[in-house]
Image (tube, rainbow, N blue to C red; front, side, top):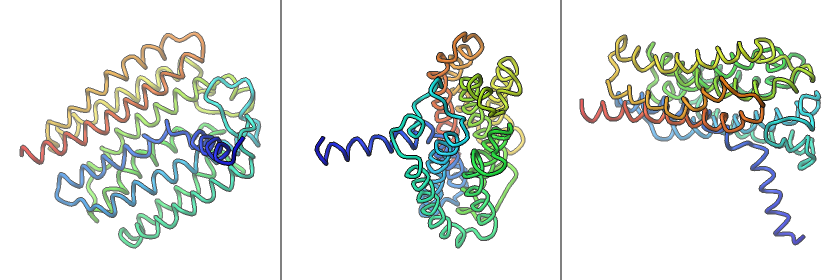
Length: 304
């Protein structure tokens, strides 16, 4: 193989390793937090761009760290149903993947330094915890995902903290409805994780990875998924009633379209392999939800 061909193969391997399909979970809360700030005349381009860059860097670093630590702990096996993991499959060396994760976290810290300068100690707290949890999700002496805490981590950091932090670095103020907006995104981000963990439940249980899906079982996880979707869809209505959000934010309910098919499959699947497309459908539902609620805030500002 030519050097150029080898470079292309290596680049594709790294793209596979950072799992682009998971990145909507990083983008969605930043878009929503920025839209909320923009609707109030408080949006700032550079802090918003930095928040997006930081979120993407931490998400990709977490994915690489998970690939490395899951392999080390035996959480990734050759019989897993989900997409290929580059370390377990021998596509990339384990130490290279770990170095990649640390480099991405270092880049996130650089971006975070600017955000801390803008937003002060609240952003410092969010940033430090985000970096630590990126490693502790599947690494360290008490990996969160292995003890059923992954769902809580995703809700807090990809929902409340991400939307709240994005809003804060632009507005430099806080209001209760920011947490409500973050909860909506957090519910659907957690739903993405639920699908992933239900699909991998059998292999995770064998490997000693006690995710919430392993603890709840298939039936309990189905109930959890439906509840998360329902809660997310109540958020725009609550915003309208409790915080005088524009009625345009109810556009977010249109995200039920991709989520309906995902829910149907999750409730009726017989083989875990059937859940691979459900993962994509749920991620699209998250993207549509955050995008449409954000458009709703913009339309409310233009028409109000």
